[in-house]
Length: 170
Image (cartoon, rainbow, N blue to C red; front, side):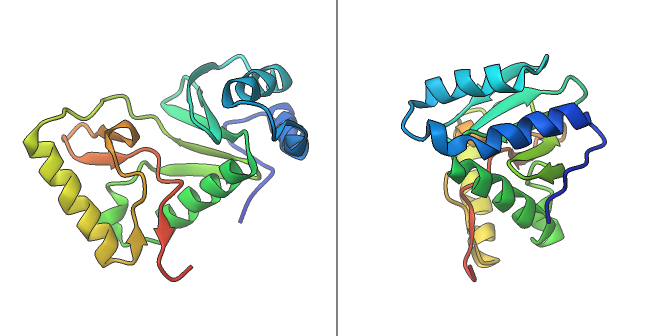
């Protein structure tokens, strides 16, 4: 279920995102970098962009949360997937997913996670075990690699980008 209301975004920001999403088709043939530029110009947010991928741009809301806005139709689906997986997976797996606070059509707000995963055998083993756990619970953890991971304060692995995960029953 999506919403056009937010506790963290203003109604103007929501309207800007809705307008951007309604125009996505117009930009489908542009490169990712060109889409990011167009999105930033259209939204006119004061927030800093802290990253982007093929399908979404990520803004730092400066309050411990990030805003992911779709820059492709697939990005809209990535946001829906993150929301659905977060709220429909077992609790013991949910603690390894970056928490979702709010979402709407084409956007999602999640907790910000800063720490990168060290590339050593201890964390590689933890990642393998986590992948197996997701699979055992009917979730295909596509894109489970270090760039999409962070560490919690307790040094637990947190998946910060799980938009390409897939529930096996879907």
